[in-house]
Amino acid sequence: MRGQGPPAAPLIYPETVNDSPDSNRPVTSPSTVDRRSFLGAVGAGLALGYGAAAAQLSNSKPTAGTRRTASTTPKRRAQNLIFMVADGMSAGTLQLADLHLRQTRNRQSHWIDLIQRDNDSSRSVIDTASFNSLVTDSAAASTAWGTGQLVENGRIGESPDRVVRSPLLLRAREAGKATGLVTTTRLTHATPAGLACNVIGGDRNDESLIASQLLNRGFDVLLGGGSRYLAGPCAEAGLVTVSTGDELAAVAAASSRIDWSKRERLIGLFNRSHLSYELDRPATEPSLTAMTRTSLEWLAGAPGGFVVQIEGGRVDHAAHANDAGSLIAEQIAFDDALGAAIEFVTNRDDTLLVVTTDHGNANPGLTDYTRYGIEGFARLEGFTRSFEWIMNGFDRIDRTDPSQIHSVVEAATNISLSRPDLDVLRRWLGGETVDPFLLANRKCGPLGAVLSNFTKVAFMSPNHTADYVELTACGPGSGAFAPMMRIDQIHGVLCEALDLPTEVLL
Ligand SMILES: [Zn+2]
Image 1 (cartoon, rainbow, N blue to C red):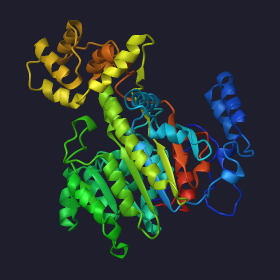
Image 2 (cartoon, helix red, strand yellow):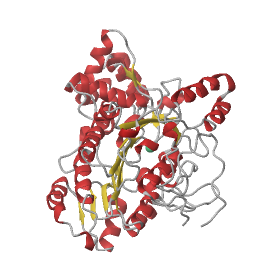
Image 3 (cartoon, helix red, strand yellow):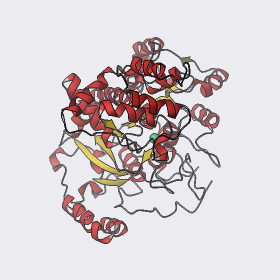
Image 4 (cartoon, rainbow, N blue to C red):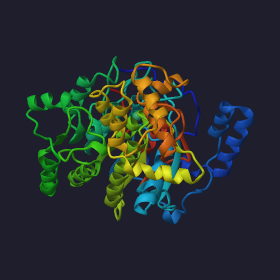
């Protein structure tokens, strides 16, 4: 389908890269926008209103690089791209995981480590607003970096005026690169789909269509959940799949012997739906780190390079649930996978590594400045099960009996709830509205709130937020990320680095 181009974006930021990549043109990327002029524009924005500040930003004149000196600027072209997404990661989630690692393992997170590589990495702040909402969903967000279009929430690869562009993973494949998607959600979920698929006239929930596109478009590596949608079509197409962590490990051991001329595919489906939360994960399911390592070992041999998106998808789900224990466990599992990716790119100069998120979610934070803040936060080490496990437990008890509610929660968290806390949960489980912020009664909000009394980690809601989010990048092309960008502008930087055409219509 063809159209007249995307609608005007609601906010204006400096353009990131020229639409027609040309390795000979001088670097005028927005990474060179002077930080003082940026801050000045933001300061002026406080007086002029946001739109005026954005317009001033768009007029900021690129100046000499502020982030790197010429001698430390890496190459602009990348053979490979590793794009990592901690789905639904508010800034507070990154920071709580880092604080937890410092408190319990005496080290900081790999992500903070990467940010601190001052001369080797770039750090950006991303405005994630979609075409029709300041608060995006995962479909619109991944479509933004997958196609360079701002689309309506719920849409995969289709703009409001029906412009359908080839998504980045498909263009990479057509350019001769190997391609992969790795996730802890269903592979047919919105974040993998936005980089790889187009659901024309439909929405993100058409997962059968997404499944058929993932297979028909010939992507080389698919690792995650969603056998419910993918196992049947794989069998019909005669594609061999692996379904346990052990089988994946056997594949990993043989990956150096892959004959790329035969274009063998690696498809691992480890759950009918999403993979289990890290706290509940059975031994049969591989960790995100294992999937990351195997995908990189597999793809590394591809003669034309590769593009892979690796997603910690259940960070988002734990945030929706206001489940602090799972949230930190999922974020650390993602961070471990990031560590494996950093290991892969270390001592290479051909791989762009980008790590970001698609939106904030629930904005968690530690909120007690007395000693109880430290003691409460330390209690999260005692959380051994997810809220999903607790909710399943509530289905098997008499929900009107506070002592039974107490037992389920204690078994999962090692926390002994007080009588008033148990009364709140009993009323909520009985269908009462217990929180005056109505949204907070959804999902597991009241369960998260009563546990906040013990952990001192509180949440603002059980849903996505409009807050700007983190992006960190290293390797060739990373210098083109601006200090502040719109989410759809990420796409141009990726295409420029990979020397892929932009705005290819389907
Ligand atoms: Zn998301």
